Amino acid sequence: MADENMEVEIARLDERLKSIERMLVDIVASQKEAIDGRRRGYEAQERTEREMIGINHRLTSVEKSVEAIRPTTAELERVRDRVVFAGGLGKALWGIGKGLIYAAAGAAGAYYSLTGRPPP
Image: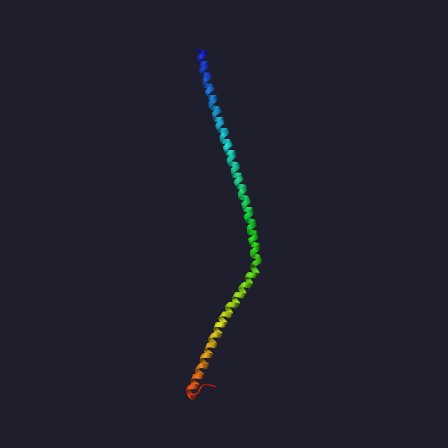
């Protein structure tokens, strides 16, 4: 009977060891998965950092370009203001010119109606 108890005890210990071994295998597998996950996270972080550096360089070049064209933009605004003023002045002068032509036509018509002959 002692041999039977000893065999049963050995079988139980063997099962416990197998259970512990399976748990260790599971722990090792989960640690490998965690390592891979961290590695992927670090790689993604590095890619993002590289992209941010590239975006910063592009933004710097855009800012330099904007600073370079700023005088041209200011000159364009001055020219636009001059053109707008010239357009308004041209409209006013056309209005005055039309008034003068109407006045001259009215004077010629009055002269013709008073004298009966065309103006000189």
